[in-house]
Length: 196
Image (cartoon, rainbow, N blue to C red; front, side, top):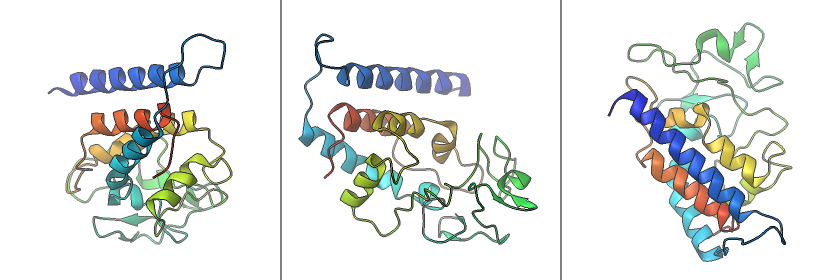
């Protein structure tokens, strides 16, 4: 499949997911509302967990004041630190090496738009959490960067997150199909974001 077709398919899934989410979240009195299914929400979240625990996600959402890299999640070799905004410190900003796209070649810096770690104020660390704790963290604005569930759904479809499926030469992509991931994120949210 060409990159253009893949991009169009992503846009279609994201648009459909967003529409379904908005339909389910309508206020009372605004017309029919999709029936929420907490069992389906919890099951959808459980289906997401392997992707969220993959090194492509965990390398930025792990303990410590630094990013990790590689399939073995070793500390970043350039001694990079989180910094006050999550984008590095002093001359070692993330954008010094990481562009808005992957650079060509094995072991070259990967990239996506807005490449950064979560800020120290909201580090979004889920290393060591149970599935339920991870789910609760994603729903809690005091722990998730002041996001609503709708904004978490939106974040999950940003180029930075979707990079995990196209991480560049020499990196293993998230094995769960990207479209399935986006559908499960939407199912979790539209059914009430219930935690397992």
